[in-house]
Amino acid sequence: MSVKKSRFEQLQVLKPSPELTAPPKVGRPEVENVLESLSTQMHRDLKIALKQASAREQRKQYQLLEEAVTDYLRRSHSDLLK
Image (cartoon, rainbow, N blue to C red; front, top):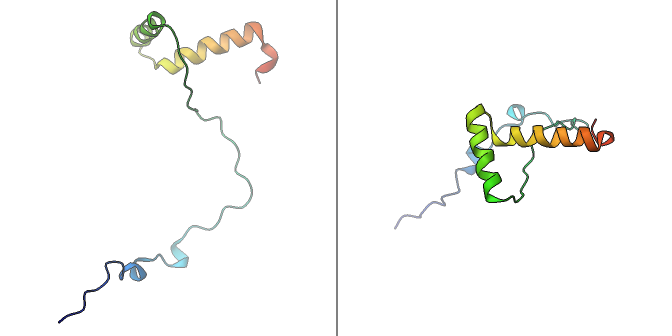
């Protein structure tokens, strides 16, 4: 009767060698101004109009919302913008 080999037996062979791994990052990376997820609610008619406007302008909905929020902040709370 033959002995069944473990299905994880080959993992030792597949481990990367130390010289192939990337060197550790030193220090804290700079915080980038990346897009972050935002969840909100709005009235259906506004949501439909936003979708239609973004299609007309061939822009993403988030771009229109960013522009609107930026304009609002410039007008009403300019001290909050960098």
